Length: 345
Ligand code: KG4
Ligand code: ZN
Image (cartoon, rainbow, N blue to C red; front, side):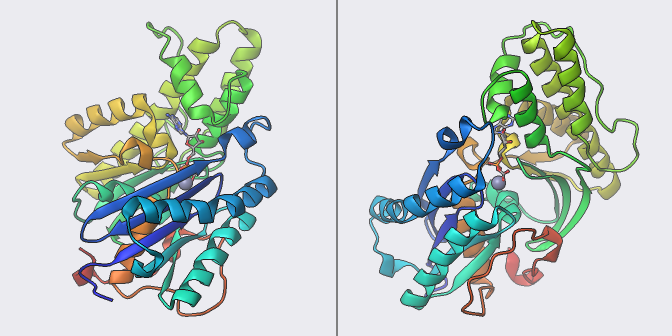
């Protein structure tokens, strides 16, 4: 394998998106294919794990073929198979890991189990050259965390949610307001119709000195307000969005003061939110920190972030050392192997 020019495939099946991508460390992202199961789950208002696994099985091989054709390469040109081995839904993770390990075994090339949250965390680096150390804000359907990143793989969680993740709160509030799934884009759309914001909701964890989040109280506040004011769904969507994002701003501002870091990368599905991006750009100017986001298509789950993380790990000698099909549904970011400082950049 020529390490200065290798191609890694990324296989993402941790939840409700089947993502397959090809990352060349010479030419960057050379294909990015996605099949979203949103329409499959929307009638249930959330992800049904069994349906998710069954659908991943149908999608992965056609998507691999599509990616190879798109990049005009063959399967023999691959140098590594990166796959999401956790955190996520067990059955869904098993689909991706089984296919990855089988390909690795038959092609005799390494498989690299990737932590899904590390994939999100590194996604802004696909299009931006960002040096370490830095702060990361991870805001997805499963997590809300502020992470200190010393280098790739060396992560310290400074704050996380005590109850619902922010994405979950967007999804549940959307359901309460009778909107669709996933709730984030629906709330954003409705909130944008409010020109003058007259309603304000309490900002979660505003007076607490720590860096933890809590979003379930805000969701309940929105629910109670809606019960008493059923015609005000747009104002409620707006007030919810503003309060949730203000909470992120407050905690990140504190994290910047505590650590003295001047770089903040923001990723995960909720980082696609327009109001969030506007508010963090204001924070960037106010605190004189550089703020980075992934491109919009790389905020929610995708194979590109897994291929990218896998490429980095493979180049630094980190790949699966066993032939077992392994998943890690509750894998914490703090339990990853760090890539040595002198080779990680
Ligand atoms: O990262 P992701 O695709 O999946 C997980 O790893 O969890 O994040 C999905 C979450 C959902 O809760 C969805 O409602 C939220 O991201 N989301 C948004 C937006 N787009 C997606 N939340 C707020 N505003 C958006 N524009
Ligand atoms: Zn995700």
